[in-house]
Image (cartoon, rainbow, N blue to C red):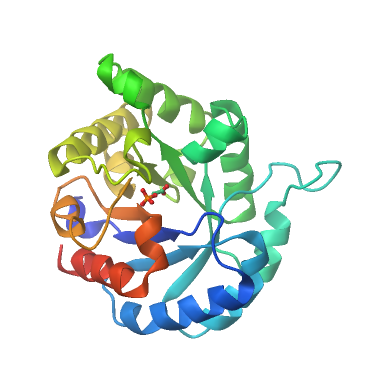
Length: 256
Ligand code: PGA
């Protein structure tokens, strides 16, 4: 299997942006630019926007994801949201282990692993984020950091479930900074991730898993990044909040 046989997935990560009414407006702008796309198109939106987002995209090719979920079915976890809550309203995807969760909210590889398992058990498709800090890249330990994250985040997850998981490579130094990894840097680490997956599972499983790049991907750099063999899609923050930029990235994925 090669790139052309893997699902290309362009996902917006809205972060803490857009009220429900603003979400509806933005999705109404995204729907026409996503129409006919030869890739999967997802908008991962804040919890309170999910219901209106799902209603708005009904009958279109745009899918909706959440930005996190808890591993427990229910209980004393103030402020958290369970996979059952997401499933019941029709959420399909969930971003897990985003560097902002790791950096500001104490997320660890252990909790990312628990959340990923819970998401898969509930039938949600996880988008698991990994990536090195600038300091780690400068110290030349990018591969060690990524291998550790892939091993721990996917610990005890079967090959069958791993194939339902999307990995997003997001170098932390490139997120929201305007500093994109070069296409070669992105390809190098995405290829490393695939090799790591082949070690952990097998070559066929590794070849089937969609690996995205994320970190200042935009309408100007998407085509080059997405042309790389191991870059199967993108997880897009800032540029996913502007329909025409997001549309241009979808176009680039369709052509790439
Ligand atoms: P950015 O964010 O595109 O704004 O850099 C990417 C992400 O955090 O997923």
